[in-house]
Length: 133
Image 1 (cartoon, rainbow, N blue to C red):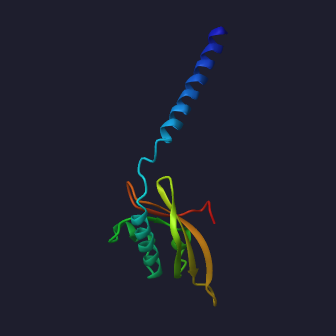
Image 2: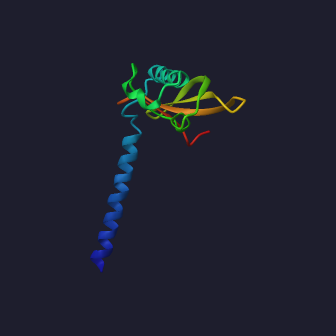
Image 3: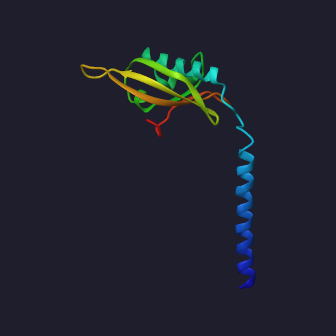
């Protein structure tokens, strides 16, 4: 019984040490920091592709290869226009950029403001941030 209690304490101590080390390691910076200029170019390229009627699944083989995830685009929504609102803000390895989208609607276009997370390293990705509206 004494051994069992002692091994549990050791396991908890080891777990606490691992958590402390991982947090300390994370505070040193981001392994692949975002390149904000490259991220803005990638976002504009993706949105221009959508506006021209392109398929998001064709982006990995485009002139600016990237992976794009936007559920509205993937489900066939038509982008009439967009406006990038500001330069975005770095968020870990991403650039978070607010964009006003104008989507084709039945009889009337609909506007909405959304956020995209753009990563530039190790690969370029443009993802709609579903956690922020």
